Length: 328
Ligand code: GYE
Image 1 (cartoon, rainbow, N blue to C red):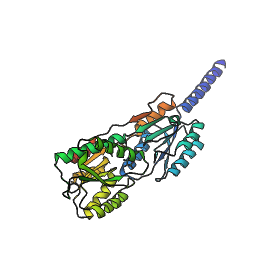
Image 2: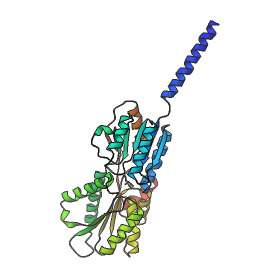
Image 3: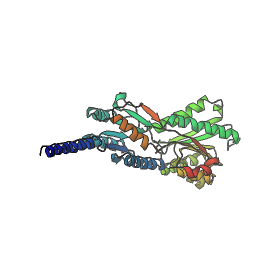
């Protein structure tokens, strides 16, 4: 009898131990606020986050802010009320996060930033940021462009002495926009060839195909015969602009050199068709690193404040060979 009792106690103990283990190994609940679905890149980023959450056994509460910061703030507040283990989000713009992040800090919920950067008054308001280096991307755009203009000996179409550049900027106030803009401008200013370039017009196309097309139409209306180069801060805007360029009776990638950022399949397709010249990669596949980092944070391990993912540059000449291996 004693033995039976003992065994019973042991097995109850085992059950309790197993239960508390399963509490510990209990799936983590992570709230994630995504910006929206403005681009092919963003869709790839979202799909990757969702797939990585599954792979890591995380219960993901995913919220789509439909391009509105106020929706992101609401979602983060909901995550706090739900007492999630960790909050992740992509800051649509860099500023305006202090208050909501203070609320998360008071609730002792760690915050991990993905993709875009943010500016806060107190760096302890978030634990870490993983994402891409948009400043370097902007510099790579200029470096590629300057090399191409020289290699192909491209002359201003209007017979003048400056290569005229138009820029389709991303969302106003987004780190991806300021970073790419500053990187491009700095590289241009520091270049020994700086005097041969002129920025003719620069306007936001909000990272969407539709607005990229509309803004390019308006650039072409006022400067059809002057534009030599288009720098689109993402591929989607370049793809929209290609339609505007063709509609204006010009040949994309020939009359107007086109370089953009992201490296999505759509732009590879366009490069293969000879309609765009180069893309500077911005890697959206950040989900794995995000959840790995989240787990480390929740285990109390130290993580670097900022981690960048790897990125390359792809000119049209390699598009066909590289295309089959593109993951997004
Ligand atoms: O380049 C663009 C997207 O934040 C890096 O956002 C990201 C940018 C990306 O919509 O396509």
